[in-house]
Length: 170
Image (cartoon, rainbow, N blue to C red; front, side, top):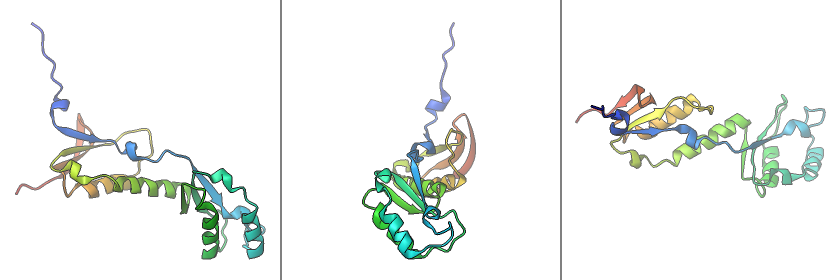
């Protein structure tokens, strides 16, 4: 007499969301204004404009670019505007800030594209372990997006979950 194995997880009706599917893995280049400052500290308009004019912008073609200044310098707003005039025609995206900040912004933009109605009255498990650095902000955001529609939200793996939210019975 053979025993029939039943996959209770598969029959549970749980939907597993792996946030890594939306994580931005594409290369993000950094444009550091420090490299275009006099003595690495002072922005001289004429020299700055000349440096930008002589920059090879083709290296940013179809890339995401984080524009930042790693030096403790006062950078006028117009400098970022000027850089944008060079990067916008060639880059896939331009962001003022660091590479990790830009990656986080792209990640949140992608999460915003999720249609919450696809998860209407569903039991959802948000996968907790993975290989990519999915931060707590992404877990907060997915919960915020799905709580109005989900029947329940859990964290972890289908075989071992932490309950997060359960829709009140009406």
